[in-house]
Length: 414
Image 1 (tube, rainbow, N blue to C red):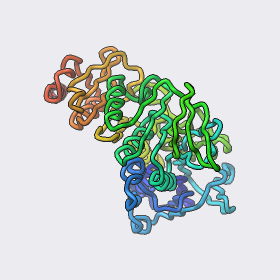
Image 2: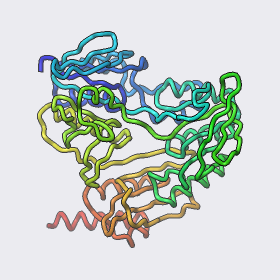
Image 3: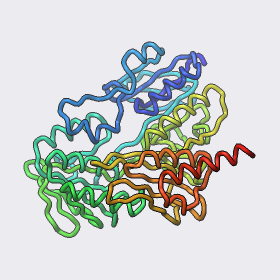
Image 4: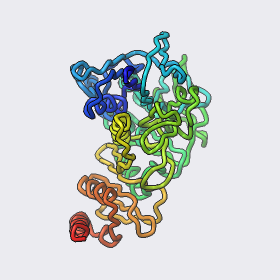
């Protein structure tokens, strides 16, 4: 591979892909392109510690020396313009053409735009990058009232952080519960109650009609019921859109993301896609999915590196996710959208409990609140294919641990 590998995107997926190529023994050129100017950084802290602490700095994914030591040509502040498939080159906005043998698209996703009257006013913000987090931190220091539009993970993390920082926060969610696409109803209700205990006002089954402004800056949110909510900052968290424009313009197959096979190869085999922008048939659920998590991004990056090195292993990582909302650490494993039964263990009143999801008799996911041991057991059970009996799931951590150990012993005995 004389031209080596070019990677577009300096988030978790792109940086891990570059690192994994070297770890797997790839000796050719590795070029890592990103349009941000900051050294690649961890994104999860942005919605929590970073926006509440003026002294907080980005947490680098790797130190400066890592890129030089591993011969990774890191090019920041550079934007990819188009892919020339015939010439096998990536053309940058400044006209530079980078020849490649393999191209990895780790372009991630961007916040879904709010399209209503007043959405372009100053103070209407969303969070995806360090630059966004800096704007939220600076603006929140100058306001007292904040409206968060969207009851997903990012919106609720920000709502809890700002409320704990003394802001008056209102969350507006169009669905009839928070985190409706992500967790069981019992967790949705628990999160709502804990947030309200912090002073956050939660409006469910509510949308925005418009945003009012004063001298070009937002001053209030008008709800679908006609209520006027004074606010000098609106945080928009209504989902994300995968960044597929480069791939789509090059003629690659697109289906809610860049369509990839189990080895992370796109419809053009010399181009791979990983992370938030990659759509694929999931090994566990047999459904077409596009997952937005650090775990998915880094696991796919490792596999993409192995694919480039000629190892034909399929992507079979167990999906898991987490979110810190106030004093709640939510941890989720599996894909639970099709579950037909949920079994709760522990007491939500103690802010520590677990929910096991079943499809028929099959365990398909585990969600926990401040129960890390149950989360780790869930990852083991899903990975091994062990379907814990529901009555044991309801009995608590020690019973689950014993049942898993007994099953493993039986498997080993043959």
